[in-house]
Length: 542
Image 1 (cartoon, one colour):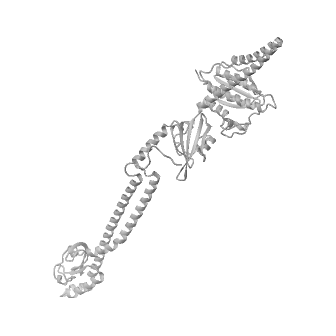
Image 2 (image 1 turned 180 degrees about the vertical axis):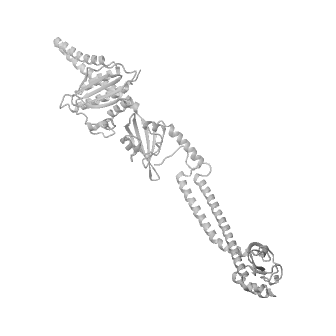
Image 3 (image 1 turned 90 degrees about the horizontal axis):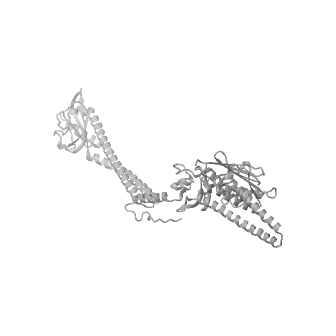
């Protein structure tokens, strides 16, 4: 389902980079800094390791030479260089160190890689070695910067000579350069993986945000939020998992949703089963009536799909409580008018009969017929108006009496019916909804068993200790005990056909109105063999 919006097309007219592009740039910067930092740390660690290894190797060679018996003998000979120079060069070639210098205590060299330097003073620190301690240092001598170790040659506890072994920094740099390619390869691999991951995340984010820039995304959210909460109709978004994704203030009021209902399953919102099924319907639902505890709702649902995937339903709700009340009142007025029309028709027939009797000279029969009909109508009117001062209820009872009479049902107003004007405490439309629907239901029920017993509906309306009591009993088939409260739910009916949505509205409206007024409605067996509905509504103080 394709949607268009007057708020602009995402990602086309926004300023600056999109959220995905900004995230990609930030991730690339972070990954690059981390990889470079790691590479530098690895280089420094490798350099320190190579230098440490060079120092250890120099110490090992220096100590080994200083402990050599041949070296101790040679330094005490008349011409130490003749014996030590070949030996030192051979060891230097075997170990790969930069230089081996054996010297006297006064720094005079006995050996040197450059024979011309023999006899010259050694350049560097020797004080710790003169005290009998082997030490290392980095120093720049005749062969350039080097890491060197100086060890004393001991004879009978006396320092008689010194051995200096050094590895030039150039050799150390060469070894470090040999170690760096693997480090750089690992760094390049990490950088490649980081960049690839960042690009993948950016592409996914771009697909989800549709390339919208942050300022435009914020502006769109503000627009949609304002529109959502300003709509008078209730709007609920149900995701594909059957949970409430979003709803506006009107929906919260119409459905009486609990606080923080977002994310809650529809089945846990306390809605009727029929309404819950409608909210989760996989097919579109158009103008379906549902009765809740306090409202009559008109529900529409539209399944939403995005890029071939089901995303859930968009549900709109409209409050038809007032409209339903007005419709019920209009039905009552229409029924009353229809009753008057029928009475006028019957009156015309009887008037013709009276005229004909007069023309035939049977005046006594004409007077008897006319007065009998007038007496019956007047008795009904006097009975209703004498017992019920509430004008709307009186009109309803008169209309329903005529309508029931037309359908062959006797509508009886019991002798204990007494009701003053309650218009100041209870809305007359509520009274019409409750009593009118109960009478209609009773008349229909009485007709069902007309073949077995005389169809009768008995009505009682009175006030008992500040409680308005309305009782409607019929001679119909009755209501099974196991039905219980289900009789007042939307869609319940004793009549067949019509489907759940098209029937069972009358008693549901009765139950809803009674609950809203803080009253109760019970169902018992009537004396005529049918059902008796008793409504009790507390009268508020004037």
